[in-house]
Image 1: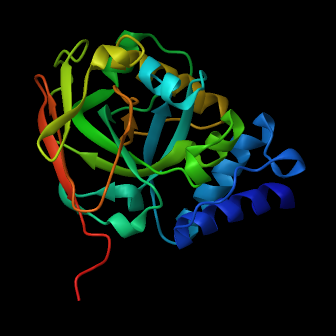
Image 2 (image 1 turned 135 degrees about the horizontal axis):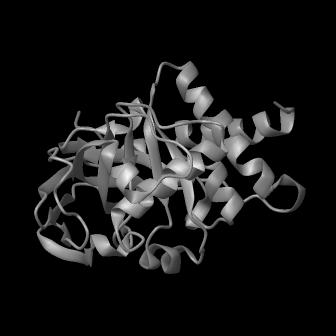
Image 3 (image 1 turned 60 degrees about the horizontal axis):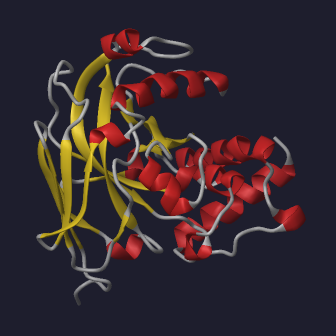
Length: 261
């Protein structure tokens, strides 16, 4: 792996660990699209070296709302690690992030390996369970400003995962209503149909994309299918909840900005 790839990954890792935003890279300092996923892999490798485990992957820019919010249009993916999992109910440590946002998602748990070009039925056959989920995203770039290559390198802005109760894989998640609320007030209303028309299509795409990187989704892996609504900014002390039709409720509370003495 080149020193340039390692240097770009170290810069992003340091920003996340020190919780400070960095300027969007420009010119020769910016990663190219060809470098983006290698930088992401090197970034995640640093977390694994510190003791984290790979637990799956996340899909990004799978909803029109998300694409419009970020001004991008490409389907992307990122790697999930064990240190990103947050307990349902909270507290979510506000000081662990730079400028966190949250979005509701559908999460798949796999019982079989999955890779390459698969049909929706083949993808569903590999699913052990499905759950409502919330993803915390937190770009390491100042003001959430980035190019497509920038955000891929930054592990698709992935920062935290909160999982709800698991359900049997035959539950129909095609067009489920979702209400994302902050402090009891609706902040976003959406549907799982916003995830590529059906969340299962995101799982199909995940199998193809991970194979292109020379990897596969292993049994026990989770796959976050992508945001069903635009992301909502988090603030210290907020109570976050999402009600999913058929899948139930999930939520957490954000801790205060400063820990209690």
